Each structure stands twice: as structure tokens, then as C-alpha cells.
Length: 105
Image 1 (cartoon, rainbow, N blue to C red):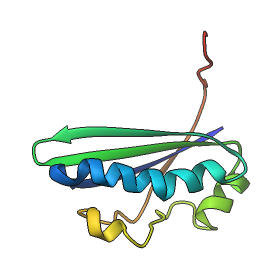
Image 2: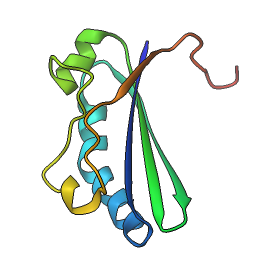
Image 3: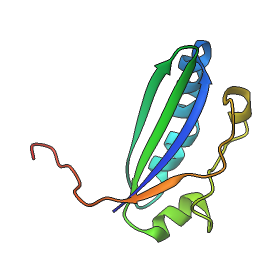
């Protein structure tokens, strides 16, 4: 299993609005891609900036490419992202999941 992590920062006063935006754009696309095994949306306020971290789980590189394209290291953005994000970070990170957590275990 592969974990894909993406980071974005928005102004604190727009964080709830951006969360709703994420839930209508990237998150449904991630979940709808065959081979996706879940999405975690994390949020952390730090002064006047709110950081979002998305972690998506994938069964293979081929599944990941179906969402991200051939260059899986490149971040994928949506048309409204530039209205919220302080920076369009160009890359994401991938990790090999060595010990997946299971409910009750």
C-alpha cells in the first residue's frame, strides 16, 4: 500500500470555507478513483494560517497514476485552489505503508 501526502496552507479566516471546498473537489475525486483505500483530511491552525494535510491510501502505483497522472510526484490542483491557497506547492510525497491499521487491531 502507498500513502500520498499533500500539504496546503490557507488564511485562518478562510479555513472552514476551504475545508468545504476540499470536500466538494479533491476528496470526492480521490475516493472515486479505483484503487483508493481512503482519505484523511487533517487540519492544524497556527496563528493566522491553517495547514491542511491530505493523506490518501492506494493499492498500487498504477492506481495512483489514474488519479495523479504519469508524474505522481506532481501535486494536482483544481481551478479554485488559487483562490484559497497561499502557495501551490509543486510536489507531494509518497510513503510505503508498512503496517496498515485495522479497526480493533
